[in-house]
Amino acid sequence: MTAVKELTVVKDVTCPFCGVTCDDLEVHVDNGKIVVVKNACVLGKDTFLHHHEGLATPRIDGKPASIDECIEVAADILVKAKYPLIYGLDSTELHAHRKAIELAEILGANIDHTSSVCHAPSLQAVQTVGLPSCTVGEVKNRADLVIFWGCNPAEAHPRHPTRYSVTAKGMFTPMGKKDRKVIHVDVRRTPTSRMADTFIQIKPHSDYEVFSTLTALVNGHDLDVPEVGGVPLGEWRDLVELMKGAKFGILYWGMGLTMTRGKYHNIVSLVRLIQEMNRFTKFLGAPLRGHGNVVGMAQVLTWQTGYPFAVNMSRGYPRFNPGEFSVADLLGRGEIDAAFIIAADAVGNFPAKAAEHLKSIPLIAVDPKESETTKVAKVVIPVAQAAVAAPGVAYRMDHIPLPMKKVVDSPYPSDRELLDRLIARVLEKRKDGQSGRKRVAGRPRG
Image 1 (cartoon, one colour):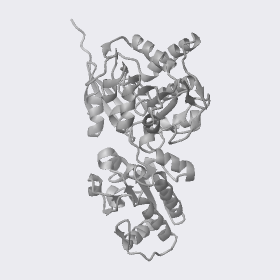
Image 2: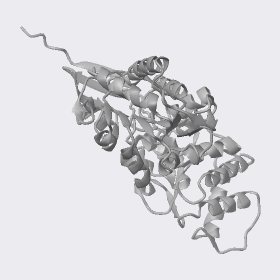
Image 3: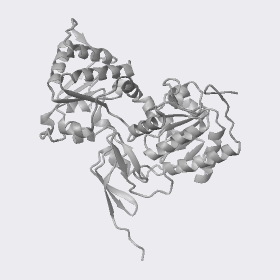
Image 4: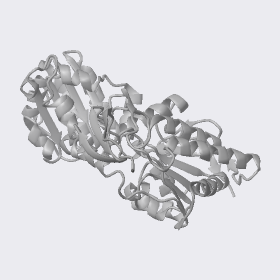
């Protein structure tokens, strides 16, 4: 008789989809297949229920190959490259991050991740002026005023409002939504606007002007203008009074601030407003982060190199210079001659010029599933998906580390295991003198 596997129930599973990193999922596995996912949003459920669909296959130049053969060719490409790029890593776990940084150091490569094209301005601003912040648990338990600015958590982070910020019931907010005021500020209405008590629609690219105005009003300076950012000045006065009257306020911002005119200056102005508010009450801020472990990659890169993104290792030590070593700029200028893309779909998300350059150079794609990047890559190496088929650790958007569990098996290695094997082959080839790289002042020559 054939042995029948029993249904396995895995509790307290961490979801890898977005920066909320929900850690209360219950996953039911039947004969090696995930059949039920409880407590997750629709995005989280899809991540687990459909993880076995659209899986990548190992191949070289479009032809089937073994994992070992793929690693061998990938090592050849990276060792011979004069100015390689390692990019992605926000949809995997911390130990893979460490290994990728080790590989970048060995190769003298540029290493960057998706913060570079989303919340890099937030990281730059925090480096400049700091940030009074808190955990999502403190928001749930204490916040009586929540402001969402240039973000849409209702669609991008569906459980953030219900677990932490809008309807969540906490120690000092036992009535949930009734105990807090929710404000949404954006250039257009979104589903988040419907959750809010008040929606304020501002003109595009006016955020810096608005934050400067709010800071002036907070400090008691009146302004002789009828409107700011397309909103009557009286509405901004009302918002300031609401902020001052809160016992515990939190302002969450998104890419509506980081990817618009002003970039990191918008966030600097916002943080200074939050700092001024603390003269009157408890007020904090935090970015709403997208990918499941985007905060983790920035954390690991910072503690390993001192910098959170756009790091160059070509001189044998880490250098940081956004605009010079940022992934979109490097590719847009056509400087990179080989790319190692792991846990990200660069071709499907980059500007056209950057994506075209990726297609023109030797490209290695490491991903559990097929994507626009794997479709054009010279070498495709499938791996076990972190938090589904491989364990690890991830950072929630409020910088709290959470364990990732393995709930199903995979025939492929994890990102960490793959990088270990690749590093070993790169080191062997370097000893054999196969490196073709020559550099002067951190740039390729000849």
